[in-house]
Each structure stands twice: as C-alpha cells, then as structure tokens.
Length: 579
Image (tube, rainbow, N blue to C red):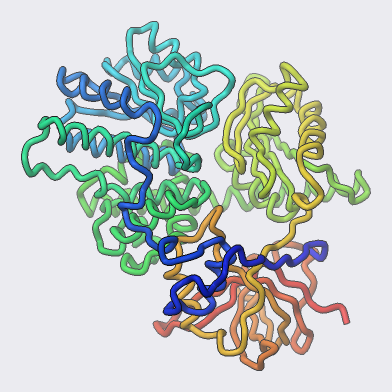
C-alpha cells in the first residue's frame, strides 16, 4: 500500500476552451482527458462513425438479406459473459423485428464446451438445422469450429471484436474492427457494438431497398440500452464512439425505454431507472448478468434480456441476483485462498514479487477465477492469472492486466518463445483467457513473468494512482458530485474522476465488518464523510484513528441513504500519516 504514488494528471488542453457554463471541477477534469471544446461534449447519435465504414459490413448484410428473402433459419452463437449475452439478445430481437424466420440462439456451456464456436458446439447447433450461424462476441479464433460448420454445409458470419490470430477462420463473412488492415477508427468496439453496427447496416439496407413494410418499428437505436450495458460490462475503452453509444443507451434507460429484463435487473439492485449511470451497469447489472454464465448457463441471462413480459423479467432478475450472491460467496473463499498463496509466495521470494503472478488451486471454480485475478491484481498492481482445473489434466486461466501492459500480446510472446506451452489463448489488452496442460503450469509461470518483465517498464508495474489533484475550498458539496455524475459516461479509457488530498480524521469506525466509515476535515476546513470499502480485507492495512491525519485518493459520490443526498468521498487509497 505505501509503495503506491499519487501522480496528478496534466491538462491536455485549456479549460478555457470548454464552455464556461460547465461546473469548474468538470471543466478541469475534461481538460485533463483531452477534451478541447463544445464539439467534444456532443454525444449525439449523429456523431457515431458511419455504419458503412466498418469493414466486412457489406458482405454480412448481403448474406443476411439472402437469408431473409429465402426464409432461411439463422442461429446465433454467443458468449457466456455480459457482452455475449447483450450481443445475442440484440441480434435476436432485431432479426425478429425484421421478419426473419424464427431466429434462435445458443450459448455454449463454459464447463462443457469452453469458449467460442468449437466443433463440439457446431455439432449441437447442427441439431437445430440452421441455414446460417452468426457468432457474436466470438468466432475470430474459431478456425476448427468454422471448418466443421463448412463441412456440414452451414455458412458462418463471424462478428467479433477480439484480436485475431495469424490465421483467420474460413467464414463466409467476418466483421471485426481489429482485423489487420481494417480502417475503422474505433478499435475499442465491444462485441455488442459490432453486433449493433451489423444490425443497423442491415436495417438501413432493407429500408433503402423497400424490403420493409412502411412504418415498421425496427429502429436499431431502440436497442442501445443493450449496447450500453454490454460495452460498460466488458470494460472496453470508452473512446469517443463508445461514449456516444453508452450515453445514448443511458438516455433510453433513464427515459424508461429499455428492455424489461434490464429494468428488472436495475430494480433488484436498488437502482432508480431515471438516475442510472454507467457505473450502475458495470457494478450492479453486469455482475448479476455474468453470474449466469459463471455458475450455470447464460441462456438465463439472454432470456432475461429478450422477454417482453415484466413479471417474467422480474423472475429472471431475481434468479440472477440469487446466483450473484452465490458467486460472491465462492469468490470470497477463493480470494482468501489466493491471498494465502501470495503470503507463501512472498515469503519464498523474500518479498520480491515476479513481474507477472500466476495462482492455481485444484478446488477453484472456473467461472470465478477472472474475478479472483482482478482482486489480486488490484492489490499487487501487476498482471495476475488465476487457474482452475478443467479436467483430464488441463487447466484454464483467466488473466487481468494493468494499464500499459497488453496481456494478450504477452501471451502471444509466450507462445512464440515457448512453442507448445499454451494450447489456446485469446483476449484483449486488459483481460485474456487460456488453456494449458497442468504439467506445464510451472514452466508457464516462469515464462509469463519473464515476458511481462520484458514488456513492462518500471512505471507500468509501479501501481501509480493518477488523480485530478485536490478539490479546492467550496468544492466539497453535492453540486460537485452531481456535475461529475452527469458528466460521464466514465469508464475504461475515460477514467472516472479521482482526487487526492490530506485530511484530519475526526472519527473512524468499522461498518459491515469490512468497511471503514470516516468523518474527515479537509485542509480548507470543510468536514466531509468518507468510506473505504473492503479496507479490512487487507490484514496489513494500517489502523486509522481520530486526530491522526491521512492521505487520501478518492472519488466523489452521493450518499442517498435516508432520502437526502449528501456528499461522500469514496476511498481508493488511504495512508495514515507516519508522524
């Protein structure tokens, strides 16, 4: 904890170039993120990159038009996370509205089939006699699965956003902004963003050619609530294009124009529809949706997003919330075991951690290892992979990285320098998955640490906290919190504002057995409430006592408990003064 440094962001533009009507704190924050004028604040739908500018769209649209005209059956094969679920639901809903012949979907059981369009899942899909398979949020690395579909005479349309390998599958059409030579400038589209672009292009072509009935209610913009959810939950960078998609989706949710299942998930999480922000999607709805794929079958999550019946939606949401509670219990146990492993590792290495850390336990749950890797990564501030057994001598790993280190590229380097060590791998800059023989785990552990050390500079592994500096006198109020909340969407690549400063502790008490509730006084003399969530989860966390000053890095939030909004600082890093 004490090794972390506060690094204050430097303005990438002049705040004076932004509208003077903006809250002064928001103006500073925007300038530090490179926003320069009113045009950068316009997140209207017309600012989206043109639908037709995404490569592969033309071939995909013609393939789908042919299916519609010939009344051929389409089967969507999704992924078992929130991005995959929203992508699947979006495509199915739009194909139904466009008059396709009974479109259906299939989400692989992660424990039986693993990720993507495998030959085994093609065999299951073939039982439904589809005339076309569409992959969403997967497929670009499914060489064997696409080959098996071709062998069975089933064409495949791949829509994906993951980084491709050196060889592409022999699909009939591929839409992916990250293909080599692709000129589409928003490489950060989530799988649901790619699916939206394909459905929007198809709808436009059908309208343009007169193939839709006059007045048909098929506007793909109606589905932007799903795009916002999948984009935020997949933690892809919020570049300008993604910020437009998320902002427009949030507007529709707040206006009550969203899927009943999404509304029910927000309701069961205790969130008001008219006040939803991106963080509600990422930290409340996303985990509940993901719980289905982690513990059971993501079919439950897709059905929740597809239903038009409110009572059915509430039943789905209740079940997903129950699964999420079970997931939290499993995660807490696994996290404790992971931290115990870390203590042993630190002792054996005399406190010097490797650049990249791998953890494994034969009792761990495959569906939860990504969350464990994420929690340990937050503590260590370096990339972490958690492994669980997958049967027959194999283990599956889930990696989480730190800003500045592309973990999928690291795995690519491991595969290049150590042929045969990895069986399968894929993913993004910040997260990846892999399969390898359990007998290769120790060799992989060493190779991963070496490649991380080679790829990462000292600053990448330092765990520096980047803040927007201190709040000034008169800025510790609900007006600041409201301006920052409404100034989003915030997320990966467009970081939620974080501030830092020195405070006197007026009161400190433990709440909920894990959290630290504080009453602080700022240097300006203003008193303010703060909370450090999960502070006591770290057994080495230093004690915080009244009258002992602390250094704090914090986010600004509104505590609405009791019905009256109050300012609350949410601690991201807390260090009591040593003298």
